[in-house]
Amino acid sequence: MNFFEHQAQAQRNSGLLLVLMVLAVVSLIAITSLLLGMIWNLRDTGQTQSLPGHMDWLPSWELIGVVSLAIITVVLGGSLGKWVELRKGGSVIAERLGGRLINLSPQSFEERRLLNVVEEMALASGSPVPPVYVLDDSSINAFAAGLTPQDAVIGVTQGAISHLSREELQGVIAHEFSHIFHGDMRLNTRLVAVLNGILLMGLIGSLLVRSIGRSRSSGRNRSKDNLVALLMLTGVTLWVTGAAGTFFGNLIKAAVSRQREYLADASAVQFTRNPQSIAGALKKIGGSARGSQLHSGYAAEFSHMFFAAGVRQTLLGLHATHPPLEKRIRRITPEWDGSFPPVTVNPPLTPKSWAAEEAAFAGFRAQSALDAIDAVGEPTPQHLEVAQQVLERIDVALKEAAHRCIGAQAIVFGLLLDQRPEYARAQLQSLQGVSAAEVFEELQGLKNALLRLPSGLRLPLLDLSLPALKLMSREQYAAFKESVKSLIIADGRVALSEWALLRIVERNVMNQRQPYSRYRLSQLADEVSIVLTLMSRTGAATEQDAQLAFDKGCTEVGLTSLRMRAVTETSLRALEQSLERLCQLKPLQKPRLLKALVRCIEHDGQIEPLEAELFRAVADILDCPMPPLLADSR
Image 1 (cartoon, one colour):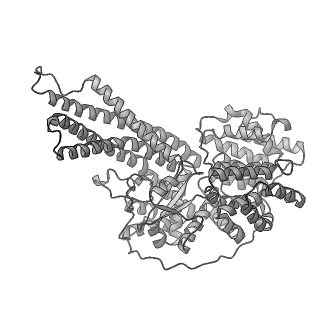
Image 2: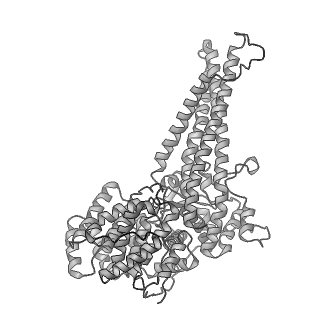
Image 3: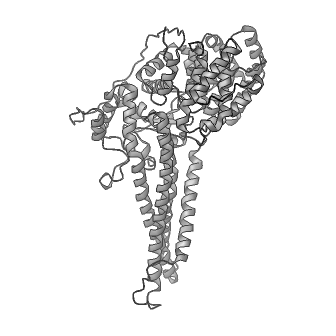
């Protein structure tokens, strides 16, 4: 199952989650109504005579209506409240668990190694570099949290980075990236909101029982014992209902989460081509005295999101959110002997440098881009190798600047500077009056390195800068965006590459929500024709060449009746509106569009680095994490 099939399945699982929630709410209504009906009947015992054979313990329809309204209100209110909180992104969950952000200031070589592994994985998969949090916990565990790849974060415990080797850490991070790619992370985060509403019933009952208990123990209001007893019984009923809600909630967690862990393990093995990496991490969890259980009081709420079981399992594994370690290890390495080796802390890490490999890319064949489409969400070890080389080729000063908020802003400005000196000077003059002084000063120091940056390293450097850019306040971001616009229009034109860079920053920094997928390509023919027209004219020497490229794209997408649009119909505003609609394509429709775009830019038999950059930028806008294109020659 590839990336697009996983996305389609994730949509179906969201529907299943809704069905499970409805069933759980109906069960809670039934249990609460029956209990309250019995309490009401007990209260009336001795006051009325029951008819022979009449079941007085059954609740009335009026009672069922009141209970239904109350439970639905509580469940929906609790779920919506939690949903509003989680819409802020995965950082909310990481901070709730006690995580500390390390992107800007890793405090040890272990943390630098972790950050380097995450950046490699992100560049290899073509996805945004997520903020990385370290949890001060001696257990071995990790998680991915968020609603979209743009607001995703990765959290790793101190125990994991202290006990796991670099290869084992790669396996764990690849596992978490699989959850991000395949929609599991979004489903898991939604599940937190859904279960919050269900579990709220138990919390209300528990608080009511405690408050009534304190009132009775105080010895006051003895004349109201009957009312107090009735309220106590109601509180116990709500507490029992909450216990039932917890039961159903844990069942839903187990039903949704368990099988996805096997799939993420398999994806991690496919990514790293090293079964021992993730198997070694699982073995160390089994051999560690602390295992994978977190000490955070919020671990149970987010238990289904962890790499391994974050809380103690109960009910003979009925509520287990993760398969047993033994089964996961044997699926990866069938030859395992069943033993867990003792775990020791890794020796302190020291700086290590890798020789940079200067790769002069001569361009890409169409097959390179088509292979990258097939690898969306399923990057290969070759892509990981390219990502490692890319990180080595980026100037050290630029990498250091990308991990600072001011430096990241300066990098975006520098990526927009024109290669022609006279235009670059005009851009800097326009920027000097609108940007913050410290950012402008940083840009001056990085300007030469940025102008020398090869085109194939522009998007990776931007990806490295995204976590730092996300730390801007709304006021800082508004001023930053105005400065970006000033740079773009300073030379009197807006290039397609400039527009694409701005859109990538907007989508990732402001955490724009993914629209619901509902259209087929045939329903968006006008939008498809506008995008194909603009991509066909990119790099085409003549209008005739552009028309030939456009026809190839139409044939690939299966819409041969499309017409190439005039220049007046293909403004950047029209492109933006078209891509906003195309983002709503059904998952299995997107690879057809991406392959059509490839046909448009390889009309001359080769894809230039700038064309490859634009192609990957458009794929990012369509929520398709595109791995780097593998060069055919060096």
